[in-house]
Amino acid sequence: MAQAVAFAAQDEGAINRLRSEDYIAIYPNGSRYDAAQMREATRRFFVRNKPPFRIRFTMLSAQRAGTDTVRVQVLKHASCYRGLAGKFRKDEQGSMERETWHREGGIWKLLARDSIRGLNRWVDGKPVHPSKPFDPDAPPYVPGKDG
Image 1: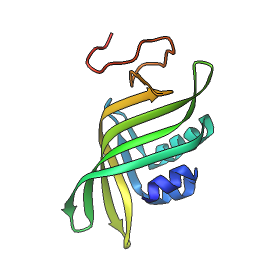
Image 2: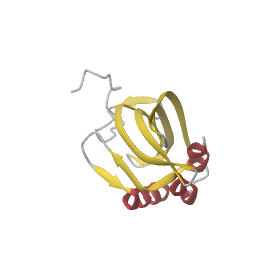
Image 3: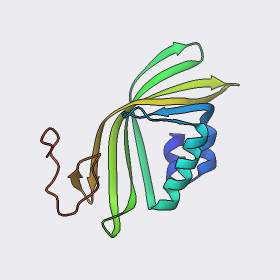
């Protein structure tokens, strides 16, 4: 998939060319990022984190939402090295997402990413709470047993 190749190559231009000018990402907390905000977020991501950058998408379902629009349910798994607790550690995240793709001038572009849920996170292979700061001394996170 072009997104995975562009991400691994740290090719911000290719990532941004895959996105529509009207691109929007909607996160579970309700925050919304438009195309310009996502370009900046992508730039910052590559500055703050270290390779290898890996991402894979597993398409779970697809349905037409119009003659030039399709909604795709994907399982996304991403990893990189992130500065956490004083050193760079392998940070992996998995989530279920819905992508909306739209054909613009004969080219398929990512119009929206939303319904991001089921977030899981591992640091150095250890399950951690996906929305809490990383604590290397915390016991492994067990979903449903938040403390």
